[in-house]
Amino acid sequence: MNPTNDFHFNEKTENFSLNLFEYFEEYSKYLNRLLDQYFNDEIYENFQSKIICLSLAEQIKDFFKKLSQRYRIIVQVYIQQHLDQSILIASRSLWDKTFDQFLEKQFLKRNIFLLIIVFFIYKE
Image 1 (spheres, helix red, strand yellow):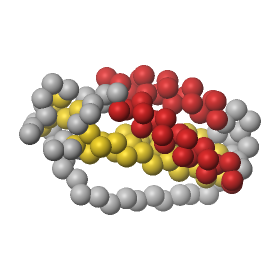
Image 2 (cartoon, helix red, strand yellow):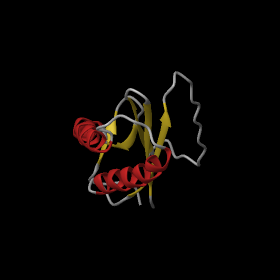
Image 3 (cartoon, helix red, strand yellow):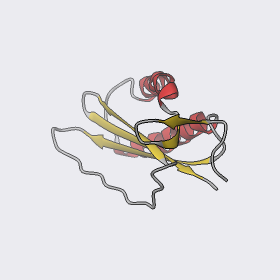
């Protein structure tokens, strides 16, 4: 039941993990295109941001489903109006540090703060 072909051995942590760094540059370019598409006017609207969160989460999840079928992919998107305030986000989950991973990406435009967290949970 251990991972096979889509994993590599990481010598630093001495365990197997999904090689997300290969796809990080492609993922960053993809996200930049999506965000330019959704936030071209740079004005925060409360009702519109709910729709954008759902759409962004689905598109990001579809992008990562192409990498591996052995992971459950969970995408969290936070959009907030940025008026020089702070935000604190915490999450809890059961975590297997040998196989599970996450990516985090922050974007800050003129008055929009966006945080995207993608969790990769290994399915047995």
